[in-house]
Image 1 (cartoon, rainbow, N blue to C red):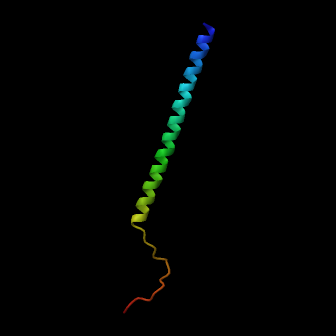
Image 2 (spheres, rainbow, N blue to C red):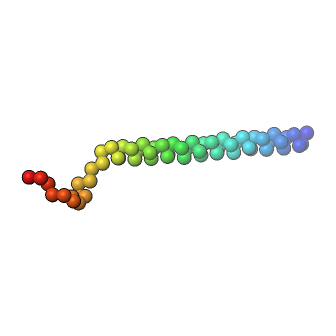
Image 3 (spheres, helix red, strand yellow):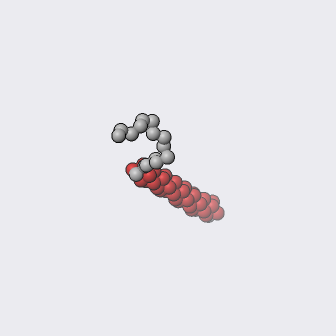
Length: 59
């Protein structure tokens, strides 16, 4: 009976660890997606007024 209880405790511990790992992966995935989305929004309206102009403007 004692071995059975140890096995049950170990099984519950493994389930908790797996749930924590899934939660951590989900957090990393959502942070990565948020960075991609922010980079996409920044690239859409990208304007660089301080960039040097290589050619003169036509009159």
